[in-house]
Length: 356
Ligand SMILES: Cc1cc2nc3c(=O)[nH]c(=O)nc-3n(C[C@H](O)[C@H](O)[C@H](O)COP(=O)(O)OP(=O)(O)OC[C@H]3O[C@@H](n4cnc5c(N)ncnc54)[C@H](O)[C@@H]3O)c2cc1C
Ligand code: SF4
Image 1 (cartoon, rainbow, N blue to C red):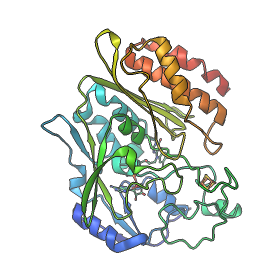
Image 2 (tube, rainbow, N blue to C red; image 1 turned 45 degrees about the horizontal axis):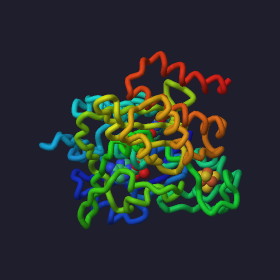
Image 3 (spheres, helix red, strand yellow; image 1 turned 30 degrees about the horizontal axis):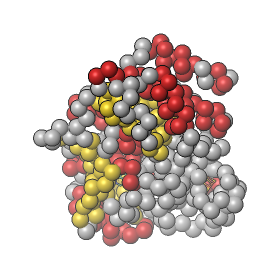
């Protein structure tokens, strides 16, 4: 049985107390929300904070509301179950978020895991998501001591086993809700002992498997997610994973669209997940101002697939995953156009036989 290493537990009751505790703990401190990512990581000695600041008693982190302008604020401490079921985001405009939250892991993990924890999820790699002994046997890797620089006693080799000689780590951003929230144009509030600020979700991330949360300072608590009022928009989230019942994504496509008269695209946002160390936003200029024809969708999907560079450090063959990016973009946009589900299934089936 794997056990967590010893640590001091702090249980603040307010956001201000949590921010102060995080500041006081310095590099030795980490926040614990649902614990569904951090606790397994501690057991595997990937992250070994000496001070764990539990957020479960901070009620304000679960507060949600709709503002006078129609924008929705969701507390970062909301469970993924409550996020998926929140009446505030029941409209089709927010379906990317509710679908993404409802596809994280299993119902049990969704009940424990939080929206904030999902946005701050550690990046993943086949050479990293192993127990200490397994990683020790390969002499660890660049990321092995953990991205937060918490107290580590391991001596790292400095090699990336995925791309030896590479100056960076290629571990994959595998959060489901981040691509969805980027596609919805969401922002987050970050609170430290020094004050608070509000930034776009996308700006939290950097395409670096170790420094993936470069947009959030170590001493900041992510307290809330703000989704704008999206009148006339529809959104969706397509997730590729080996087991439909539960698995981390190995590719996801979040898309949001506003169609005007004659099916002309008035606004579009598309984000790819799990194909880099951060969510990748795709430029949609080619879609806007034109009808969403099959030809427009096909040309856009070719363009959208270009920045996706899956590496051989998660599930499935990387070239097949690259091909599926295009098919998933086509499928997501056709769904938002209102194509019948049968057509979408046939589109997806074009790539699925390669799985065999
Ligand atoms: C078997 C299994 C399957 C999984 N499948 C998926 C999946 O399909 N998709 C997916 O996205 N995830 C998956 N996960 C990962 C995890 O369950 C979810 O990402 C979950 O949402 C994490 O939230 P949490 O509250 O449990 O985070 P925690 O484990 O508590 O924390 C995760 C990280 O976020 C930081 N953090 C937490 N809250 C805050 C905050 N408010 N402010 C700043 N930092 C914070 C922590 O310090 C830590 O670094 C899976 C996990 C397991 C064990
Ligand atoms: S991508 Fe390389 S450095 Fe990063 S976790 Fe994997 S093996 Fe380690």
